[in-house]
Each structure stands twice: as structure tokens, then as C-alpha cells.
Length: 386
Image (cartoon, rainbow, N blue to C red):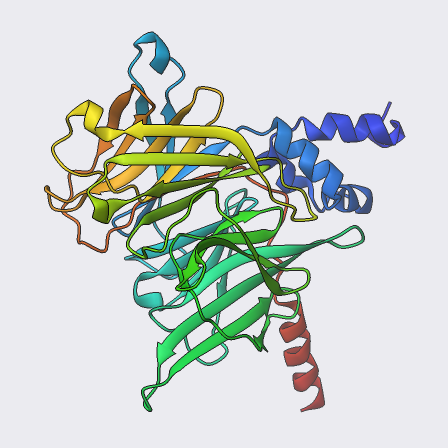
């Protein structure tokens, strides 16, 4: 019996068990599979069967890593393994990446000084360079997200925001949206009266940050890529200090967790909270889960200032990254819990104060980078006319 003769449900179940990286090669096999691979329900099922991977941004390099901490409560030391490095993104020999943003297997890479923006497909290695509408600025913020459509699958977008002082000593805010389908930017009419205090995290196609202003203190800021509007949610802690440390992380592609430290109070206590499940309606509520870590228990030589983390809800530990302020700003990665601290990695290369290591977990996705077909068609028509 040919696979095409199988019932649709059985065919879908079989294909959902194929590794995502291999499945991506079969997108153009037939129209039926092409449509199936764009179905949100099938993508969700394939995500559930795919193993989660880790990526580490450290000292302008991006690395594929795996961290094993399953036996940490049984006196088994955790370990880290580096399996690869992102070394080139088309015509770039000396690649220095300062920021990365993840959205369902696609990685938005921002090079040092914000000179280039490239989207990398982790499932097949395809890349797409994004050219600016006018120019990029050093203090740009970016987010990668999508609009979920039953008929056309995920419609990818990039949000760019920037706040800078112009020649008249006035603060100017810029917001733009890039659409992959049209390969073009649009200007959004927004103002910005808040600061951003965390790296952006994508969940269900939307992006979340910890932000804050003088009146309300810190809050959860999100951008809905479908409505192209911002919204706010309260955080489980109160802070009016912009020097406090705050970070976000995604848990199992269904929850958000937030970390908070009062660094200027010389407090070595870190707390992590967890949301309940978040769906496409963007309703957010906080669960009863709280992980409290007092770093003073471990007699560490310096104050710990976490730059990113990954929460293991079941084992109640977190994999954290930071920089060693007393040793040339080198990247450290460690596993920590209420009564556990185990360092698994420390870089040997000298870094700068601006080194902000970032850990993200991701699953290679069936969402793919569309080619710039519209601009190619326009070029082809202009040749025909001439």
C-alpha cells in the first residue's frame, strides 16, 4: 500500500514522528504534504515529538550546546557539551553576533554594532538577510513573531523599535514592522515612555519583555503580531529600581518564567516565578510556583548577576548564565536550586563588560523562510518591459 492511500489521520500521525530536520526536506514532495506541514495542529504535534535543543550566545559567538543535569539531586554532577558553532551567514568570514532572537526554530541574528540582520533556519541552514528601510541604529530592539493563519500557516514578521536623541536634544521613538511575504518595512505610529529591562522572548508567535516606567515600576510588556499592538500584564513582584536584574524564559513552549534580583541592594537572593499555560488568546496568570535561591549559601567569591536562565520546573532547578566580573568578564554557566550550585562551564577567553551571555531552548521547526518572490517578479517584469 502506498502512503498516499493511507487515511489522512494515520498519515499525519506517521509523519509527525519523523524528526523535524528530516521532515523539512519533504515540504515540496507533494501539495498534500506541503499543506499538512503548514497546518498549526500538525506543527504542534511535531514539536511535541522533537527533542529540545539549546543555544548559547557568548562573547559574540553562537554555539549549539547540550546540558545534562538529570542526576543533580542524586549527587551526579551536571555536564555541558558543545556540538557546533554558527560560523558564517553567507559571505561573512568573521561573524560577530551581539544578539539573537528565537521564534519556533528560526533564529534572528543581529551582528555587532547592528550592521546586519540575518534570519537563520535551524532545521536546514537556510538564511535570509534583512535590509533596513532606511538604516539600523546601535540601540535597536528586535523581535521575531508571526500571524497564525489556518489557510496560509505562519506569516512571519519582525518588529524593530528604537529610542534615540536627535539633533534638537529631543527623544525620538521609531517602530517598524517587516513582513517576510512582501519583503518590505512599514512604519508603526507608537510612542515609547518606558524602558526595556530584559531580552525579548517569543511564545505562540508573540513577544514578551520586562519593561518599566516611573509611575508603575516594572511590568510585563508584550507585542501581538496579529493586531500589531502592545499590551501589559502585572508581574508577580514589585520593583521601581531600573538597576534591578530581570530576565524571561520560555518553558516547554507553553509557559513563561520571570527572574528577579535586587542587585543594588547587595542582595544575593534570586527568585523565579512561572505562569500558567498561555494560548493564542494571550491571557496571562501566575502559578503558585516560586523558586528562591540564596547565593550566600554557596560562599561564592562575588555577587551573581544572572543574564539569562532556563527553568526546569519538574526538578526545581535553573540553568543560568552570567559573567565573572572578577575574571575578565568571562561567561559562566551553572545549574542552581535552593540547595544546589554546580558550575558546568566557564569560558577561557577574555571578554568585555558588554558580554551578555544568553541561553535559549528551541525546537527545529517546519516554519520556513520564504524567498523574496515579489521583488524577483518585479525585476523580471521590468526586464520584459525594457
